[in-house]
Amino acid sequence: MSIRNCLVGLLSSAVFLSLPGCFSAGKQDSPTPVLVFGIDGATWKMLEPMIAAGELPNLARHYERGVRGVLRSRAPAISPVSWTTIFTGRLPSEHGIESWKTSQSSHRRVKALWNMATDAGRTTNVFNVPSTWPPEAVSGVMLSGFPLSGSHVGGNTGVVLSSSDLDNREISYVYRDNAVAIRTAMEGLTIGSWSEWFDVALKNRNGWTGRMKLRRLDEDSYYASPFYRTDDGIEISYPTALRNAVKEELGQDYIPEGPGWSKHAEPETPEYLLEHLVEVSRLQTGAAAMLADADWDLLVYVNTLVDRVSHPYWAYMRPQDYEGLDAAKAAKYRDAVRDAYLETDRQLGEILAGIDGDYYFVVASDHGFQSGRNKSQYIGTHEFDGVYIVSGPGLSGKDGPLMNIEDICPTVLYLMGLPFADDLAGKVPEEIVATLGHRPDRIASYETVERESSDLPVDEATWDQLRGLGYVDGAPPRRGQD
Ligand SMILES: [Zn+2]
Image (cartoon, rainbow, N blue to C red; front, top):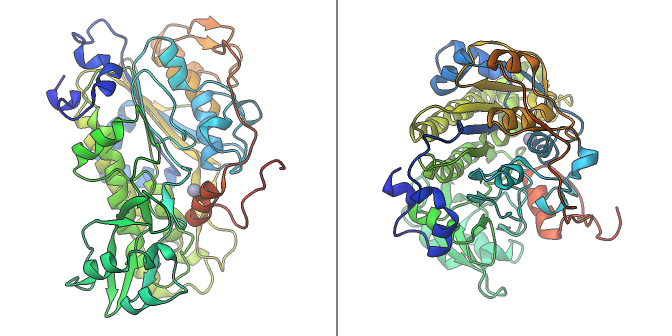
């Protein structure tokens, strides 16, 4: 246990109280911990050739020693629904997260893995899992994943502007309000480079402050990132003080969700989007890596970089699948999706470097990726076949059976030595049970009391974020009707 990971001097006493593992004597008597590394949108079409070429050393290590195969998603194969199926072992009609309209933790009607683990007295840390906002009390810590109400102001994509646009009434108030700070950041910025993060605020919203970043694209053309809110008014962590501890550790405010890809068709977008997405995902992984060498029984982290990059850049990698795509542009951005996989593997290495001793390792993706059916719209789209790898003590490298997304939750419970519940829709693959040589205990259910949940659709700020991300269109759903 390192001092750094107890965050001595960084965390408030509230957080210390919730991190009893920091003060325990060690884990020699504890069951083998389980790390679940989610890769939103990962497909074997990318992973297998890259692993074979030796380009993904961290994933390769577990691929070679683990049971691996296709993890089949279910309709609708969208992140909040599928990740909730993955982490509850229930189908959407039972867990309650059935569409973008009902995609927050408050809509979930059943326990997720971290609730089951917490109830069983196991320390569990959860980072960036879709549909975990608002954050929930767990035995360890939680940083919520998207959709997050109010974490960005004025959409979630940023804008391309010139210095004179800052006086223009048509530009969003988010940028007009911060014209002075933006002009200062523009000064001395060379073409192709990024500014430092700088402070921003809103005039008509008392206390709404945040961070922003610029990239100079051309002579007088700049990309301005979204307004990432960082004031205390947005709650993204459990316990609340965790966010400040993360900020201290990273030397930078934590950004829970990067810019979206809804502006993928605008000519400048590919020029800045990948770099900014990578930078934000490094903050997210930095937070997850922070407690890797602490005592925990279950560490769950979903990395969303591959998904966020595959939507806007997939077509450049597969121009033959699209009509009329500019060949020079395709050549320029051809490697962006590969770069997202390389970066994800590198980030995984950061987390693995912090872990001592044996552990089970589970990789899962909520869906795969393919070329879009609409050949004139240059985006990648989801497909059902995602990926899984299960490795760790007693397991060895081989192709495993087809798994369904709801099988991950019971499999992780089994690896943790926790019982299977008869009301779960998923199952533990027989091959894994046979290899490890003991059957899971069984209970009727993990549900003890009815979980309070909401049927109201997500609020306007959340819808705004989802629209900016590129996942929904149109006006927010009316509350009180479907
Ligand atoms: Zn996606």
